[in-house]
Image 1 (tube, rainbow, N blue to C red):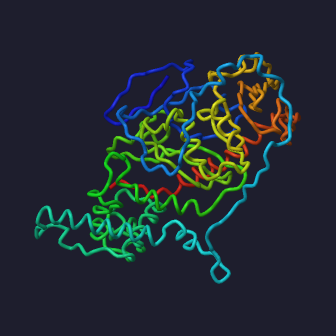
Image 2: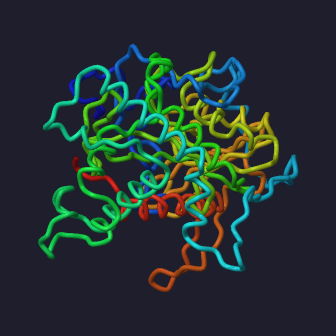
Length: 451
């Protein structure tokens, strides 16, 4: 099994792909394609896993209040092959009461401007935080050593709201208009210089703000939290993201945010286009809107007896449970234990599945199928395992009552023959494609630049 690693650190392989141990490390790649047909992951391949220092502190300020559950990722201790029976369609055991809600007002004189949407997230509280901590950090730095006559710091003036907004605006322009280096935006050469940037702020002022930009008071921060430098900003952004409540269907996915600086949180994933960066867990609507996110800080995030996949699932879903929603996940999160936990909280789940998960019916996971064939089993709790053979076997786990181990027509023809797939795979593909589209669009306009 390939393992990811952090800059300057290497970790020995601790398990094999065929291991039944549910306590695996978090996957270190985002699902780049959610389609589970012939080019999809069959749910059996192990992910490339980034590895942190084992002596790691958990993300201390996670907002979710999680229960202590006796769960180890396995099926019921007395479950046997005989406890699984043929899959049947049923009526839903609980009615979906989830409704899409917007806790903000956008309409202004009958029109919606892009800036109005931007201000939903970049609130006055965020601007005030940046102003306070940036000015504080400059004052602390200046008090530690005298400012010389040749230092750029002698030109410093306390930043205000207008300065921060102009600074952030320039960063957005830099994401749209790539230049080889920051100085190029202020170049007198017409090939490189960008007038809107030069008119907004002098280069020296921009570089000073960039140097002293801060989001937390280090003297008051909890250094056991590996994100303490960003924690106040993360909390404010999280509040803004949750001003919109998604409807019935939601998705958990991961993203890797490009970063090549020196930090213990940076992960290296050799099979990704951008091999270095921060790992984000996020819960999104099927359209790709990020409702809640968690930044992966290490293996110490588990709560009580919960495995990491269970912890992430429950923490991201906190506030959306017990409303009859359907959660779509990939094979890192799918297990009998996670499905049972969500059913207890009136939430359905559907996702791809690894065949080496414990407690699964071998008659399904090890079935020898011809292309186009499908088989499945269901237990007494309503947890279903479906195996469909395309070019490869596609293994699914679902608790949605309407899903069965039969195929439905997709409306798409190939060589004159209409393609048929199980309904659970169609629903999964439909839900996951919005997240992939969101990541795709974000990659086009990244404001990241080499400083």
